[in-house]
Image (cartoon, rainbow, N blue to C red):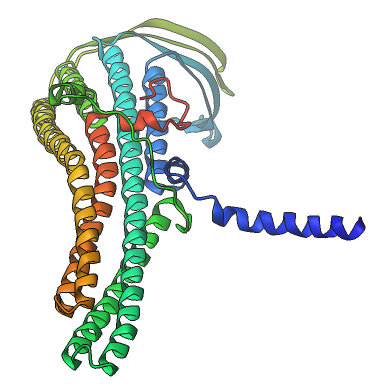
Length: 437
């Protein structure tokens, strides 16, 4: 019984070591790792936090300010024109100390306070949309890297299989050459095809290494065993719904918030020359050794009316107006680009899906053709070249099928990215913002 328990213990340890290699990583797991690993996303999150801090600054920029001012020093009294030697030198100097409590409170800012807070709110919203846009970009990049690894792994497996078949064909050809069934030229063709297949395998291994490196850069994980995505997210049934959804794209929403910021900045520049009114007060004491102690206070209104600023306000207005025009043009350009990209992606998806059945039929036909070629070669009605061409045709359509499968995955997520719906599929904990995307 004890020996059985030891064996069971060792089997469990081996199972723990082997299980990660057998259980492949899913696409969702890869994306979640990328969302917590990708540095640019962390930068965007910090930018949201900075915008929120600037909002706090705007909310507290205008308000009650209280301060205490103290002075301690020595003052000198200038001698009068009719100087009399009766005054000693020491009487020309006075020791002074004072303490004053000051406060200021704005009563009227001509709307500058309200517009400043609204601008800060819009900047928080814009940075939140920028975070969502970067999140979507990170997801799409991870999907592309994930599917690229799957593509290269499948291609390498296919290349290795072809190479093994050619090695077997070369061995059979050697026997048939010795039997006088084929010529040395036929053998040379197989040898050339095998050499090309070996070169293709080396190239496929190199491409796989590059894809795995890119995957590691995005996720911090090693891409060994990856599960093939089975259920893809749903997409709209017609292109009109796709175009309609573009209006909610994070980059487009960010541009609109930035346009609102530019509008408010222009309004703020027009208010720079408006007067402001504030409540001010002073309470304090002053003590001089010669004159004794005095107390006093002052409470009143302070009016600030700008008169001349050397053309600064005009320059500020011009700059704000240009910023507003740039923001408007950016929105128009984004709408056109997203619409064109989404339309192209949608029709590519339709073409890829329609190509599925055609590729399956082509693979079946190429497989049957190769089988008959090999049989006819045995009877001498087909040459080695015919068989090699048939094998190459089968390899081509199998490779096309692999690319078609991975293209459908990438294009589906790409369309969701262009529609602005990709970040919602992979929610993450963002900066504690009042305006999260």
